[in-house]
Image (tube, rainbow, N blue to C red; front, side, top):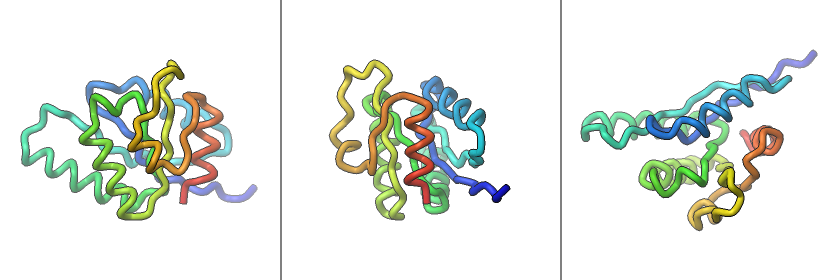
Amino acid sequence: MPVLKNRHIVISRSRNCRECYDTVCEWLNTTNYFKWTDDSVSYNNELEDPERKQRRLLLRHRISECGCVVLFAEMYDAYREWIDLAIDLANEYHKPLIGVRPRDEQSPVPKRMQINCRVTVKWQRSAIVAAIQEYSL
């Protein structure tokens, strides 16, 4: 059997909004013939400036090394600053952005994500995994 490619993935996440992140991690961990490393950096809007700067530097490093960045549209309003930073860094390092539509499917995908994501997929295990497999570097 051929060796599986280890996909380094940055997934948008925050301390106060873990449900999307935890679910997708579980899906990736239980997908057959799929190997990945979680390079995500958690955002906490209660951090003081020095620690916030350290997290930004860590996010910059992780995105520079990753194969793709996964962003959740339903987190955008609450964590716009962090997701915009991830978008800017992914574009700077030419990393593919994969957008995930809100679970309710009625809410629109933010314009900034529509413009910058290489693909936007449904909140569905097979769609997210397939996008990562196709677009991850």
